[in-house]
Length: 188
Image: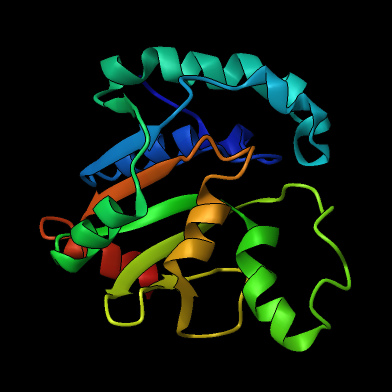
């Protein structure tokens, strides 16, 4: 299936990233707990404006994925499994997270804990998970919204952010052995 990325100006879904990886012949596994766009997310401010426009397009991409060589596993993958894959040295992961929940840990260091409460709505955001420290039980991530070169987040915080309502627990496990040269090009 040929996909036109010029039309993706308002919102990027994990399935869009899967098609992009496929276009560049990057091997990956795609895990999600929801096959297609979840119309229940329309109550979230983050999705409210764009979801009605995206439902048909996203559902079509899911329906045509297998024919395009994209295998989507409709299942949850936990933090232990992610840490094992990262530690194997064969994978990095691109995870959809709730940016607010992910950033709470460093916000609490800067702001009086609990001052803003927990009523901030969902904000979808992608991070790359590229390392794991078993002793500290922390993942090393690359966050395009952060100015930090190296960023660590506890496995508990990452799980909360990954499993938040709105994420569908979407994760792309990118096989890096065969695609290392391609990944390096994107990073530079």
